[in-house]
Length: 311
Image 1 (cartoon, helix red, strand yellow):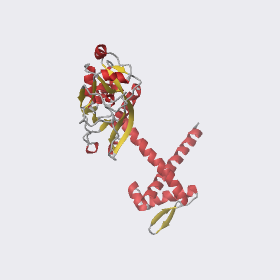
Image 2 (cartoon, helix red, strand yellow; image 1 turned 90 degrees about the vertical axis):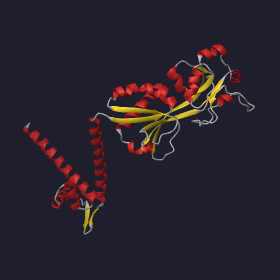
Image 3 (cartoon, helix red, strand yellow; image 1 turned 45 degrees about the vertical axis):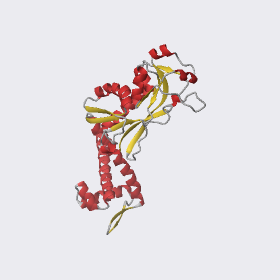
């Protein structure tokens, strides 16, 4: 048994010796000289030189060309450096992840999205996120104008169109088709349309003409089923989709809404399900500088999971 312990101890000693030599070799290859590598490692120049010589002897190859202006890697040295560099880079990344994993996620997280999406889909789901990560301080800004993430007006955005700024990271989340909806009270009074032409006999709610629509063609109900190019007269025009939703919910008329709204509120009836309007895409967006933020990563993964459950 003592013999086996001795063997294990010798193996561990060999591993440590080779690891120390590789660490010194990597530092020398990075610095280009024994002197600068020694300064970075808090070792003398002679100690660094001895380690490199011992490593070259053990491998039976030359790792550096030595000349007056410094050191140049040999072909064998280049091979070893590439491998050592990858190993040390991966170790540094894992070390960072291990350190971060021991720390509770905390700090502020400012989220912005549209009034409609934030009111009907996002905010009801934040309770779970806050319970999972109580030390993250969340604030939500609901606005149909885009805040400037690069100027840190918000940390992350859920947007209904891809960002135009090149310094923002984006992840596509969800493609949401528009459907036609009506309130049960409205349909009881005016009847259920059976085809697109029946929409002529119904009150239609659409976007206002002076409103910038998130995607083109959202007022498609005005011309759906008409082949002559004419349009119906809208019963009501509203400047955002949340207003359209509230008007439809109150029984004013029929309107086109993204399908997530019906799923969340559950009290609207889908009309003419074979008809589909434009598709709006949602994106998770944040600045490049927050790529490694744990708060951003946790919230992104949470949103992706919740959207996956909704599909």
